[in-house]
Image (cartoon, rainbow, N blue to C red; front, top):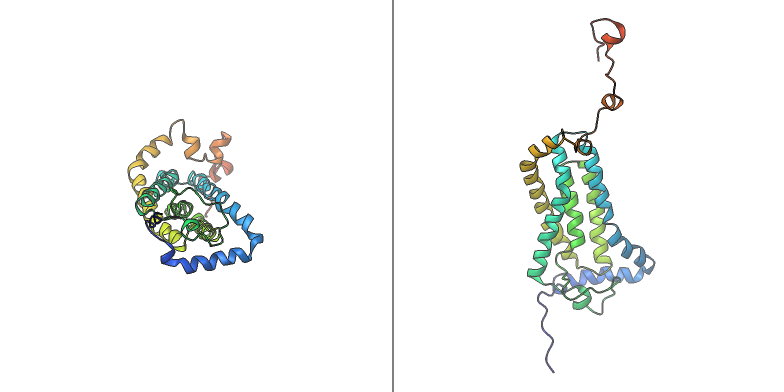
Length: 230
């Protein structure tokens, strides 16, 4: 009988006890298992909504802001692609395979679906990083949801704590660099498109222009040549 092949990278040796402590919490809170297993996947929609909100708000700003809004999903995709490359290099088996006796909430994926880094956390952290360059308020909301997303990945047993931490360390610089690069090279193009057929998608029309009327000034309304002090 041949001995089993050694793990390419045994993540349980890094922070296995911490992972086990979290899974013990999951075992003790079975009433939370279902909701958090659902959220750990469905919750990614929140980040799509936040990027959509950033685009909507950028319509009231300049071409550089709109470029960053359009670059956000591209930056997330770039970070996710980088994470997939790292996964293939590290080849860290999922906790469900390295620690089969641990309490795992979610189903164990295929052996080729490696653990380090976490794809879910990478997408979440990359969204927060890309939005930070554009809208700090939306970025703060994204950061809170990203932290929660990372914690659910460990709670359901899909990743070790170092998997989600590594995801953040990878996603933030990659997303920022991708967004800044796109802002640098694509802003002139976005500026030109704002005056073409796609302008309604990139620039909000002023209220007066949308109504087809000219704004009434103090001098026009009163017949006097002076303006009211502000």
